[in-house]
Amino acid sequence: MLEVKDLQKSFGKKEVLKGVNLTVQKGEIVGIIGPSGCGKSTLLKCINLLEKPDSGQVIFENDDLVDNKNLEIIRRKIGMVFQQFNLFENMTVLENITLAPVLLKMKKKEVAEKEALELLKKIDLEEKANQYPEELSGGQKQRVAIIRALMMNCEMILFDEPTSALDPEMIGEVTALMRKIAKEGMTMVIVSHEINFIRSFCTKVLFMADGVILEEGTSEEIFEHPKHPKLVNFLSKIKNI
Ligand SMILES: Nc1ncnc2c1ncn2[C@@H]1O[C@H](COP(=O)(O)OP(=O)(O)O)[C@@H](O)[C@H]1O
Ligand SMILES: [Mg+2]
Image 1 (cartoon, rainbow, N blue to C red):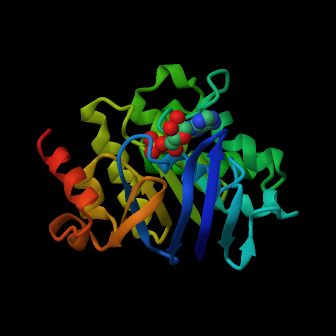
Image 2 (tube, rainbow, N blue to C red):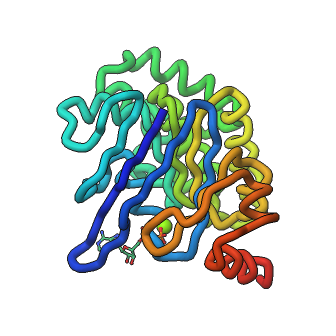
């Protein structure tokens, strides 16, 4: 479904991505772990071209997204959920989740609103539809951000540390929603420091360091039988927290 080939990206003189290769099959739940600053966020942004790669390919369902004339159309199939939610504070919950599909003429306003209310009902936030993000808890905001991605009928969702900005008691409601969506067949790529979540949830785990993927495998391979010394070191630091 997604194939990233030799992706490179520098900011000024700083080489952040030094030739990243990865593949994601339909229905896979891929976790990406690695030290802060190693380029995980930059990688996700390059995958849906929020950042333009310097070189390499991002092939999504047979289309190379780099320099693609139809980028806007293809990109709609790849949703993104950010650590800081990125909701519009001056719009209600309902306006936030219906804005893009209506603006892009994917759905009529009434249809989008009906669908949005149904999705909000599923996550018990129907009564928040006409409230503003500031009236929501962090966990509620992040669940709204996930619903917003689903409203675009995306085929894959990229999550960049979706639970890092949350109080601990709210992490569970967000991971529960992610598990539910995965069960319904969504393909996901998740950057997270919630190691237990990654370990129990992901079908494949990638360890990123120094701008490349140093190791990849099943949860068991990565967490029980790590090979690369840098991965061993990274895991030992996490276990000591
Ligand atoms: N827009 C940018 N301009 C300049 N440097 C950036 C930019 N975005 C990220 N970087 C740098 O790239 C490196 C990787 O950042 P990032 O992808 O955010 O890492 P991670 O998500 O793994 O913590 C960091 O050194 C960061 O400072
Ligand atoms: Mg990051």
